[in-house]
Length: 489
Ligand code: TXE
Image (cartoon, rainbow, N blue to C red; front, side, top):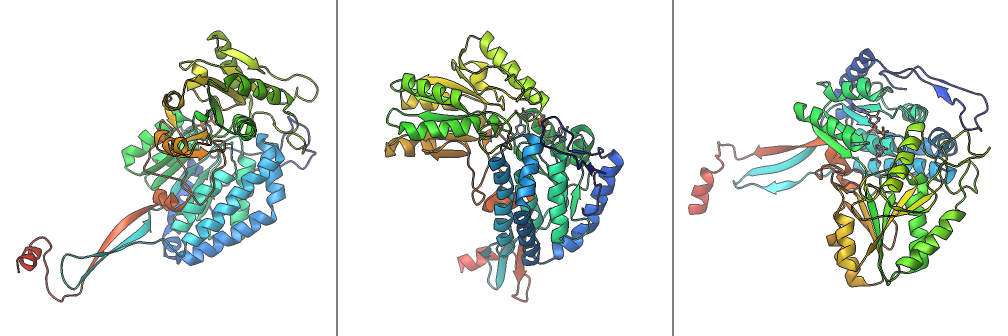
């Protein structure tokens, strides 16, 4: 682990196959640890920003290589620590590998512009410069991938990082930082500060030497971070979840649709910010789609996420379980129709974990189940009259992250790309499955639209534009004043 406040952790070497076992223990960073880590990051900034970006890229490539080498162990750790099935745990690591490789290339691009001057013998250009030490505050649902996205962009930009993982997944964070350490990032460039939101999170956001924050988490926490960062007038990237819908039109390929809905709704037990939590079905195919969906959902294999046959694991924590069960109660009370699931699973295979039956409700448009993010394996189905009605239902939520339409009508598909209020629209694919070379982010309460993670836009979070004017005329030229003479002859 590079300089800074490392968690004084010890990893249990005992068997870790059964749910409920302790994987590792970590002590929470204190206010003093936050100070120490920021000081280390600040101390490392000058050298790091002056390291040529292609050389920074070399270190990212080396980290990608080590991540690939350790993929199996890291993927299992993801599964053990937060409960997603093993193929998804490995996918979590793959996303970080992919992004590190992508971001390494930015080290050889990071383009600025040359712009014509209004005066002769003068050149104008723009440079992208790192903002300084940055805080990366991450959730538990993608404990390697999200830190991978954020850190890859910050590091290639030339910013030392202060990485604060979710308190639920410090082991993944520690293993990820071990990889960066092995890759050879200089001391002080990578700092892990594991601890609570109130001490470490607030402490980092408020610290005068922290010059940008990239945050993924819940809306209320995100709003709080945004307000605190606004007082310092620093850059903030926020990704705060969604209430993502698939629209199923009456000409959709039904097999494709059902495969997509099952993956979108129940992949990662619904705990993805892009999870399909609403299905809006054209009235002509509503009964058939709902019937077949319920049938498939009841066959879904829920269980030990390390077992390769398992299709859905537990939810990540007692808090998540409680939240989802509360929403199931809300659904029942507000007279949404429970079509399947709606309960905690019981039995020897389930009693020591947070296993919930995959659940489907038929809901009204105003129902809380149709509006609020549950972050669990619960799908709300709504009926639409036609395309326009489906789009208006899809847009009638406060979030705007991902969206999807299943249709074979090209005109409808192209209209949806413009009509759906979301940062991402899929055509004939579920709402999940972002690729690292494209911008990722949303609109409305999902977060401000001026930043996007991943893709070429990822650098925006961690850099600012410097404008350069070079006058090689050998005399004082006055913009706006001399220009008039030139134009006027
Ligand atoms: O999120 P929090 P939680 C949603 C999802 C979930 C809900 C709560 O609906 O049920 O949020 O999850 C840190 N200053 N998403 O409680 O609290 C915290 O320690 C600075 C959607 O896990 O927002 C963690 O590192 N940081 C989301 C991170 O913020 C603070 C993924 C997120 O935690 C802080 C996760 C503070 N005052 C949850 N308080 C998505 N966009 O996909 C906490 N944190």
